[in-house]
Length: 163
Image (cartoon, rainbow, N blue to C red; front, side, top):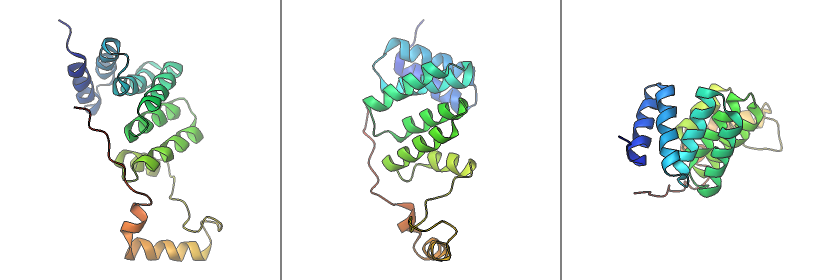
């Protein structure tokens, strides 16, 4: 018996969270096959197609199309960036992750992956190098005294409610 695409997607997210990549990929594939217009199904199917089966071209197409449909979902940028990482395109991945942070500056997944890659925040004074003493001292000051200023470089956009 075939499940509803929403049920397949929910099952896929649970399997992905449990690191059951093959099962997650198959669930996302079924959800996408049942509803090819749903950006969420596209994005997560694309991610798993790359990670599980190495289908990089298909994954990039799906993840990019999902962002074109709904460009305000930071998770979609995370998924596309992870596909780029899987393909060996670190520079492209970092660019996509930073675009995602432009959508949601507090997205934990995007921050975590950039930190794991060794990517640091931009310099406070971009016309000076990160190593310049003024940038270092200002960075230390703001981190200690005004952390909320650095963690929210722009207004956080609310995600659309898709009930």
